[in-house]
Amino acid sequence: MALILVTACGYHFPGSGAFPADIRSIYLDAEPADSPLARALADALRRDDEVRLVSSRSQAEGVLVVTGGGLSSSAAAIDTAGVATEYEVTVSADFRLLKPGREAGEVVSESQGLETSTTFPSEGTTPTAEEANKRRAGRQAAEDLARRILRSVKSSF
Image (cartoon, rainbow, N blue to C red):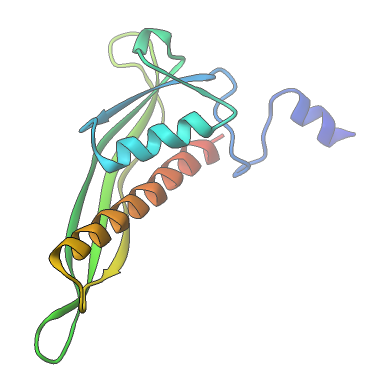
């Protein structure tokens, strides 16, 4: 009975994954706006049943400000001849969830230095195939970081 009462009032147990009760619409303010992470976050927010992604700050009850999100890559494994056989793609970003108001808005949740990496093979591939592998790995890392950001936002409540 008590469980029904606390969930009915909007309370969520820590880590259960809920936005604050008064945030039902989100504006995504990502810099750069066309990064793989910005696209992954927009997709994840569109799929989220708890919030609605809106196209302007004036429509939003919350603003998710994300900086970073670009991809970097480096050799992750090198063979005995000194040739890279595997590369690692990394996506890193900072975020703040704001409630609009006053000048900058109230910070509801934030985190800095979030980073996710994934690897892709290099051996025996053409430059075109290697670039496709890198893009695929970058999308995967961006999607992983987007999920991590949303989990972090939601676990605060």
